[in-house]
Image 1 (cartoon, rainbow, N blue to C red):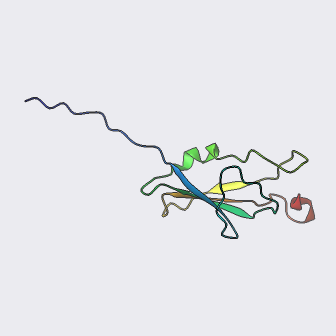
Image 2: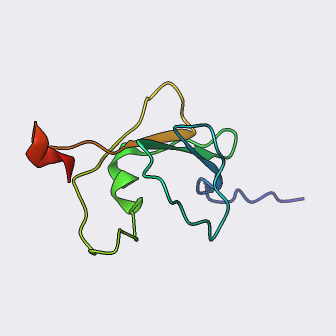
Image 3: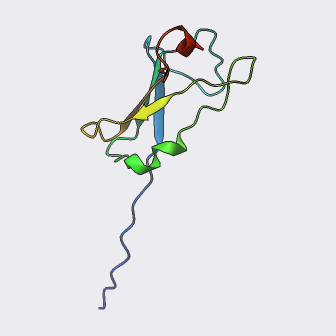
Length: 98
């Protein structure tokens, strides 16, 4: 019998849930009427998030003015399967409040 080794395969992270700062889990198609301060993205167990791919997470909706304020994405390397998106202003003071 002859055994042939296969190439190494890696599965991509699968999104499990998105939670807002008030603890509410978002469902596909939900509309938020109160602006969240942050989102916590939970991925499948064992997922390892590559920090260089965080730019793939994008906010694709805005208020009625179609303008976005600055947002940032970060990950805690100790969580592996979690990405935390926090909405913060890059400009201090009233001008940064949107």
